[in-house]
Image 1: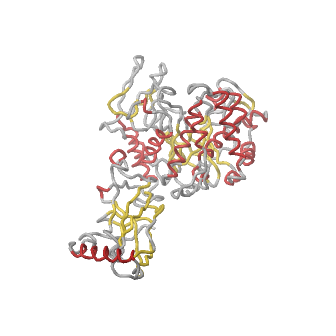
Image 2: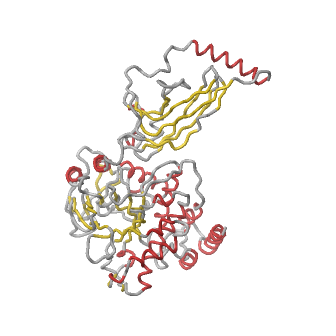
Image 3: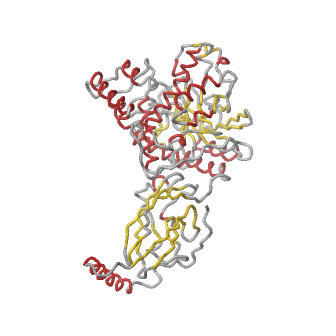
Length: 562
């Protein structure tokens, strides 16, 4: 109730005092008072309409398709990428060489646009996003969190997120001593603001599961500290863990387990780092860091910042061959624990792996270099390479074919001859991409069961963006429309349902559903109508080709992957 009242008061005050027009800027003092952990007082730049849209969205999530997700074990292979939110159609980074596949103006920073990026990230099999944490363009980060929550409600198993604190952008040229308690709290409050924003939109029982958690500890990432802080050794693990546990521990017990701290591969960082990786530190296609018995490999497809810097630097992509080579040779799953892709979408520095226009490159007049995106003019050049690399790197942990049943309403009671329309939601949890053209479908195991329909149900490829994404990727849900028709003979029928690739294999979770088929009680007007329909259907069925419900000849049915 307190949250609802506070929200109502917030909206009224902000609208009344600061939003006289759609482009009015928020009153910074009001925002600081109302949301002390959300914004830095000196850096609020978001417009009223964007912020209010996100504030008003915050509500309890309720969906039958929400699911839990497991944390990462300490020795688990993880693929991650840094992720930036500083984008609208006309602001943020605008000068990168690699234009997005739909043009730079398509990067609007809205929740709907973020969903397209999240789908590309999922197609690439990236497990964790280190989300840029800075006090600018926060409405776009909030829109990203909103997109995550909406997609989870739709049944997507989205990537997990962790905050990636950027001290240089946050504090500029200012220098602070970490021997002073208030300066240590200043760092912690940046993370608190991040998690406050995340939980505003992700407030369901499984929200904790979609934070990056390693060894049952919430992951934090911090970039270079040395530019803005001295006496770094005065900052101890408890200085980070205790305030976070006090703020979130009661509602989110995972914060009571401590933190898993990731830092840059340098000596002038937190002494309690659990894992180190080279983050925007070297110009190389791959760099290995071995720290605390965790071996991390940074991979970079290229780098080209000469549109914005002089002289700048160009690490050529050469059509993707260099990125493909490092994926094929460096991340050996027998010796490497983590793969860190330098950026998903660092635009101005030209190091992203998002889908880009392969034939239209922006080169500023002062830029002395040339490069090209793809050897075969493929917008998804680097997504495809990452997808293939991830299959190899995590092959011992993720099946090629697998699925999870999210929800279904296949009936348990029917009348003889009755047809019922049902829905079944299934999520792809394996590496293979599904398409109806490749005979991926939901089915009833007719070799064991009495048929309750045609036995095979396909999804619409166009409706599920199969052409654009090359298939239903890992983590994406698909809905099957299933017409179930009871047999003409009453009885108790055990039915078995699941995913298969026709002529290849059954796989994934299965449904075992007992259906009680009954004959209606005689003597009612409605039953008179039922018997008329019943005999009509029997005559119709008699005209059908025999064997229409049997498996096609040559089908191979193997054990399901449980």
